[in-house]
Every structure is written in C-alpha cells, then in structure tokens.
Image 1 (spheres, rainbow, N blue to C red):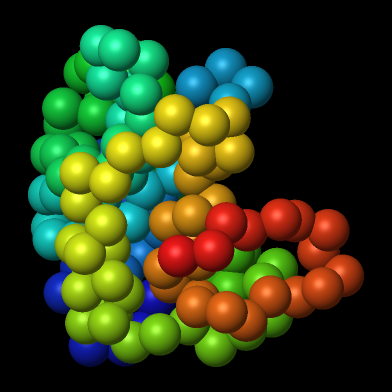
Image 2 (cartoon, rainbow, N blue to C red):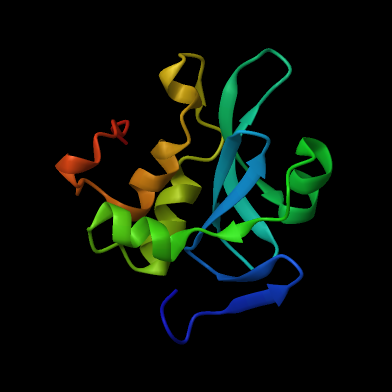
Length: 134
C-alpha cells in the first residue's frame, strides 16, 4: 500500500483505499477492491445466478459468505503482476463505473476483472492469467 493512504487496521489487518482484499473460503479466494475504510467493490452472485459488481460493507461480505477475515493482497499482487497500478483515485473511479454490471458467462464470474481495474491493460505475459477486458 502506498504511503499516506487512508488505512484501516483491525483484527482484519491493515488496508487502504485501492487495495485488493482477499477473502478465503475453503479453496476459493474471493477478491474485492477496497473503496473506503469499511466498503469494498466486488463480484456477487444474485438470486438468479447472475454475477454482478456491487458495493458492500466488509462486515456484510464476511457475514453472508462466511469467509475468513480479509487480508491485504496488494503487495503480493503488485509483485506478481509486475505492472505499476493506477492511482487509488483512478482505481476507485474505474470500479465505481462498473457497479451493477452483470455478466452471466462463466468467465464473468472471474474476479480478475476487478484486478484489471487496478492495473489497466498491463499484464505480465508470463503470468499465464487471462484477464477480462474492461
């Protein structure tokens, strides 16, 4: 996380606006972008099995999904991606533009779309990861 960013420190760890948070659920990782001290933007499955991007309180994600406390995934992700991320303001603006966007395809369930919001078009081609266009 960049110096000077607003951070939140609790039992859930330390993170700031623009950080990627990882919620572990058994063998599955649920990723979200931190947009305030208490809120994240992330993919969520609706009642009709549609995935869409929404904003929620971190406490709500924990309660409903029964995931573990989130951990800040930003430093590990920045190193793995090997690309300079956008500034925190741009990351949040890009994520907010995607709110309520729906996608019913299996690829649409991939939270790497949110990671693309953080890094833009840059991708470490050696990573072997397909990121959806945004």
